[in-house]
Amino acid sequence: MTDFGAPTGTIRVPAPQRIRGALPWIILVAGTLTYLAAIMGRSSLAGLGTDMALRFDADSATLALFTTLQLAVYGAMQIPAGLLLDRWGARVVVAAGMLTMAAGSVWLAFAPDVLSAVLARVLTGAGDAMIFPSVLRLLALWFPARRVPFLQQITAQIGQLGQILSVVVLTTFAHGWGWQIAFCGLGGVFVLFAILDAALIRERRGSVAPDAPRPRQLALLGAAVREPGTRLAFWIHFVTPFAGTAFALLWGIPFLTAGEGLSRDVAALLITVFVLGGAVFAPVMGLLSGAHPDRRPLIAVCSVLAQAGALAAVLLTPGPAPVWLLVMWVVTLSSGGAASMVAFDVTRRDNPLARLSTATGVVNIGGFLAALLLVYAIGLLLDLQHADPAAYTRDQLRLAMSATFVFWGVGLVGVLVESWRRRRAHR
Image (cartoon, rainbow, N blue to C red; front, side):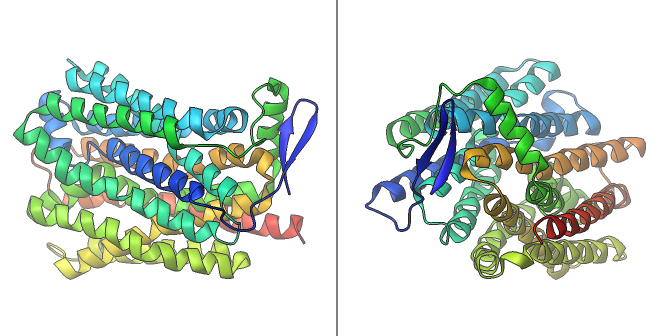
C-alpha cells in the first residue's frame, strides 16, 4: 500500500503487483515519446552553437549563457514541478510543460536579439522541467516496484534519442529551410504532444488530492530534504551525468571539431555513439541497481572514475587524440546518464509515494546544477583566454574542459559523505 497526502488524513492506494491490461503500456509509450521530444528541445542548440554565435553576435560566455540559464531554470523548477505533480498529477503537468516548450521554441524562432533569445530558452527550460518527473511518477504509479528500475532506464535512454534528432534533423532543417521554420516546426511538435498527453495519460484513482492545503505540500518538501536517501540521491545525480550533459548540449561539437580536428560529420557520429552507448548501459545498470540496491552508490562512483580516466587520457595526449580514444571517452560519458538514474532508485526506496515527486524534484536538481556550472565555466575559461568562437584552438579547449575534474571531485565527496550518513540513519 502507498500513502498519498490528503487534507483529511491519508488516502491508501494499493501499489500494483502486476501489470493489468494495455493502459499502463499506452501511458508509458506516451510519456517516453514526450520525454524524447523534450530532450530534442533541450538540446536543440547542440548542433547550432556556431549559428547562434553568428546570428546574435555572441562571444563564448554569452553562448554558454543560453544553455546555462536554460539549465538553471530547469533546476530551479524541479521542486515546484514536484509539488505540482504531488498536487495535480502527471496529466496536467506534462501537457503544461509541452505547451511551455512550444512557446519557447516559437519565441526563439523570431527572437531579434540576445536578451529575447535568452528569455525564450528560459521558457524552454521551464517546460522541460515538468516532463521527466512526470514520467517517473507514472512509472511508480502504474508498474510493479521490481520492474521500475529497468523500465526507468529504458525510458530515459529512449528519450536521449532526442539528442540525435536535434543534432541531425533540427540542424539539417535549420540549415536547409531556415532558422524560423525549424524552430516553429519544433514548437508544433510540442503542441502535438500536449494534445496526445492530455488524451492518453491517466493517474491511478486516488493518487492526487488537488484540494490539499499548501502547508501540507511544503511539509512534503521539508520531509524529502531531511531524508538521507534523498540527499545521497542528489549527489549521485550531481556527479554522474553532468559531463555528458555539457558535452551533448553545447561543448561536444566545438571540442571534437576545433579541438581535436574531426569533421562535423564525424563529430555528429560521436554524439550518436554517446546516445547509443547510454542505451547499452541503461539495461545493465537497471539490472544491477535492482539486484544490488545497497551497492547503488558504488555504481555511480565506478562510472565517474571511468569518465575521469578517459578524459584525462584525451587531455594529456600530445596533439589530436586518436579517434579510438575519443570513442572510448564518449562511451564512458554515456555511462553517466545511465548511472544517474540509479539516484531515482534510491529516492523511490527511501521516500513514500506521498512525497515521491517532490523528492524526485530535489534529486533532479543535482545533475543539472552541475551541468549548468560546467557549461558556463568552460565558456568563461575560453573568454579568459580571449578565444574566438569561430576559431577555437586545441589548447584553449583542453584547458577549459579541465574544469570538469573540479566538479567530479565535489560530487564524489558528496556521495561518500551522504552514503555514510544514510547507512548510519538506516542502520
